[in-house]
Amino acid sequence: MVKLLQGGAAWLTVLGSLVGATVIGASQAQAETTRLKVEIDGLRSQQGQVCFSIFANSQGFPTKTAQAVRNQCVKITNRPFQVEFQNLKPGSYAIAVLHDADGNSQANRNALGIPTEGFGFSKNPAIRLGAPSFSETAFQVSGTTTKIQIRLNYLLGG
Image (cartoon, rainbow, N blue to C red; front, top):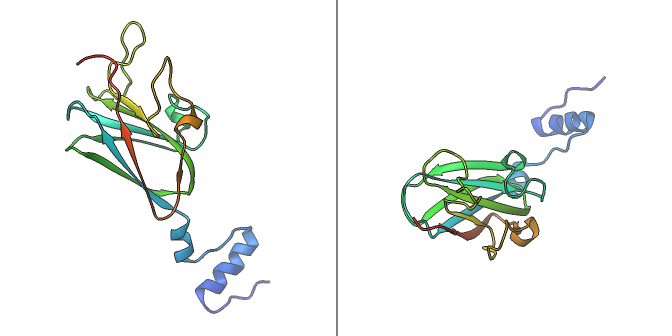
């Protein structure tokens, strides 16, 4: 039988060992997450929203947003446009961004499959015949705050 220990931290340590969990202090928990600040350059207008998909690996990158660790659309309020993501674990990530000008939460394309709205990726790779790979766009999130800048690409006029 487990004796009830005086003091919350000791009790949590015992409970953690019983369920196989690791108990960490508050300052240690804060050090294990970071903030990511993303600035978007090249917005053609303030219409609509900017949608972000953050991937922790290559599975589904960049189009299968259900496999992203974070998805978020943010209404454009001003320029320069910046968004902050909190509580990310340190590690390697890649971001796909869409300027969803009409606000329909979809990447619109013309009859030839060419994107009709702005898009971009972390590390701003050159856009060729298809989307870049996870490895071409991956960057490290570490420390208390990581800052990156993503430049949008518009393939068609408008």
